[in-house]
Length: 337
Ligand code: UT7
Image 1 (cartoon, helix red, strand yellow):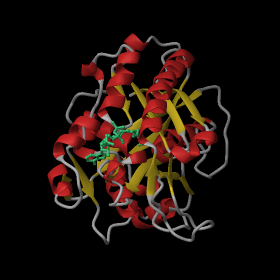
Image 2 (spheres, protein in one colour):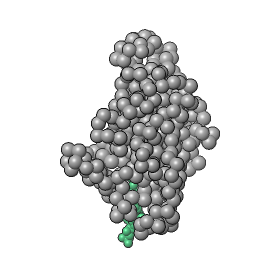
Image 3 (cartoon, helix red, strand yellow):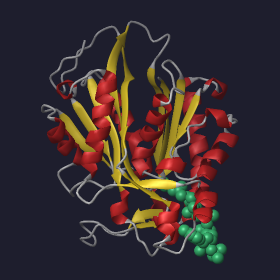
Image 4 (cartoon, rainbow, N blue to C red):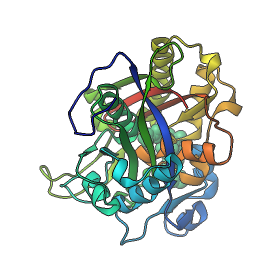
């Protein structure tokens, strides 16, 4: 039994699991193809596709803030969960492109969805942010403090790209994805569902490989994305694969039992290399990078939603999410959907 008062904890003999009760996503209308970019900067569809797997990306309109994208995804997730905004008692928005320096984008989501007072905050862990946010929501749920959590990854990355840096600006897009995590009580943990295991890590020694060169307390500006692509690539293949090994070991499941690998969508070559290292059949990998490009914290829930809505991912299946990005920060989550 969960007490609706935030922070109140009721101890029962049962196990509280956090299950994904709804998934949703939102992509802005404006689709920008590689050929569109080639009219503006010195690049080509051939280079972008062969180096990254990206074919197009979506850019938000000038008057669309990250919270607007987040709200679009949240409505769809709530709808799938059969819940209303009034049912939500925790909102976490993983983002590196907040509406404002403060308050959090999460409180604007609360405001725009008319969610009653509860816990709301943003989380900054770049491309791994959604996994960090899921784990925190999971902890709120399993400690009995929260019944329904809205966990959102949302980014308007187009607002801080450097159009002079062609190796970086072509890679990113805007969008949002959301899940509703809900408490489910079971008398036994014999057949666990929902979030089964998480592995998270960050290494600040690698911070200069991927960052924005601005911030409120340093330059007083937002800055532009800077990336040492080769170093990030190398770390991504190693750490994403290791993170998946780690969660499967923690949950004591075999990698052969994984139904779907839903990785962060940064580069098709990273995804394929990880799948190979993990001995996962390519047909078990959800790939959306061709359509969405790299949407940082939004990419995993966007890919998850795509896989569910086109009928590939089904209830009861075993999913593994994994990501690496700015920080460098990375992680993996194993979920029985
Ligand atoms: O979400 C966070 C995680 N991010 C990632 O995981 C990204 C990881 N890194 C990557 O995906 C890849 O390193 C990139 C896609 C960014 C770059 O691929 P690369 O194979 O490492 O290419 P490169 O940077 O070594 O560039 C190769 C060549 C260079 O020309 P030269 O020096 O060989 O003559 C670049 O100037 O490609 C050139 N180049 C381009 N050409 C056309 C770089 N950007 C472009 C471009 N269009 N947009």
